[in-house]
Length: 328
Image (cartoon, rainbow, N blue to C red; front, side, top):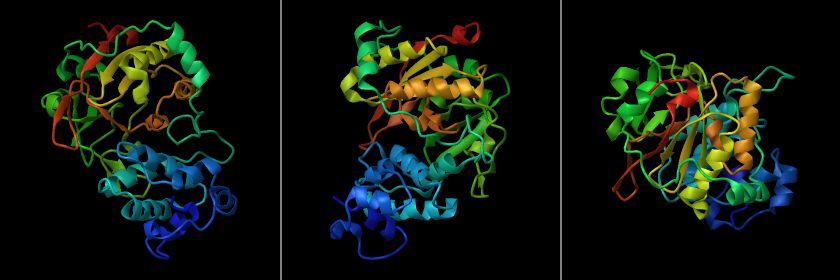
């Protein structure tokens, strides 16, 4: 195991490559010596696994955000990825997105941010999850597709003339009016779930960026992503159904992999209530990084390109626009 303290030091250029060196101190020792929590120390103690790198980056950036400037955090994450992530090359844009998520719109002293900044969300509660799986009948089965395509749902998720951010790849974001965004959406992998302000804005690092928090107009949706493969798609559908008692469930999308993305309509909710809803989602095992107001989601009905080059349809499993007052 790689010593967390060594990794923190090595991220700023000291010493040999960490994989060639033994741990310097235990996790508990490093958590007491370095200015981050035990949870962050645990995350830094092992490199992220394939498929979880984006989540790991956001969690680590949030964990060290009180101790490092945004620029130093970016350098730290860049060095960690260069030295310790072996399964793929992590692009700068992915690191910038993690920094943006962790540092975006810091609230004034003494206030609590309920809209954009990363929050330390509750851990999944196995007892609560077990109760849901034992009692809740899902409103969709998690397996069968509605057969709908992006052009059937995107014009109802966004209002006429609104700007939508989409991408064929995670590093290539483009903002277009919703009417143009649906034209090639079948072939795309990603969409930003909230409407955008313009073609780009200044991100937290002071650089122009297409997909950043400052370029998001408002929070209309929150997505609960359940990626525990042991649950199966039906189990994830049960969890999404349970959450629908708190906020309207509008859509569910098969990621083309192991997870289901459940879209909930929250535009009419107070920000405090949005945060409470998402806390419940996290208790049910949802990915906490989905709080990011400008995060990439799988394009509903789009096409996932896997690491081996194969493709999978990101099927729309459930669709209920009436839940947000929209007529089909």
